[in-house]
Image (cartoon, rainbow, N blue to C red; front, side, top):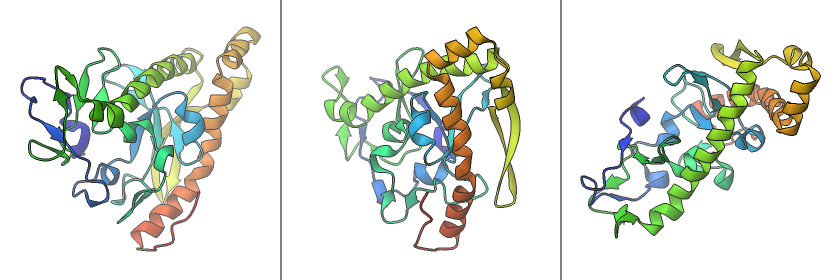
Length: 243
């Protein structure tokens, strides 16, 4: 995937004249068409489980489980199932924080600004100047960085949640079928969840983990709807299936 592979830290000297302007529905290299899964934070589990499959892949680079929303199908060229040609994102404010902040991100451990140069919205000609008066410009901060900061805070909460799941051996590997293709995912084993001791269960309840787990499990009802949306989009059907 071209997007994300070339992500780098924003350099206030080298990027002093860099500007950004989102091309929205006219984008020639749309991130929405390239992403099939996006990282999410803990609180997003509840809202995004209405639309997507929520799962917990293992991040081998950092040695931990993370939260992801399956927004499309890797075998498909359509990208996110809520992208509509000529219109853009159909979710509006309900879209993931990842999407709201892209192509800007905040490093969860250092708080440094990261950009994805693969996005064609970057140039030194058009758009809002990213860095001015020794700080990130107010327009870029308001439109993108604020969501990046929110995502970082939520990802840190997700880390605590997935550590709880891993420490209590609640995650198991499984597969879901989308259009005849198998997609490997990690999900919570409900039987193991119900076998937790009283103190651990109380901790899970008090921290909101039980509600998050069942929102995650309930998100698998979206598999068939996801497959139908992909089929409709690939078939050129204007009437997309509504989740």
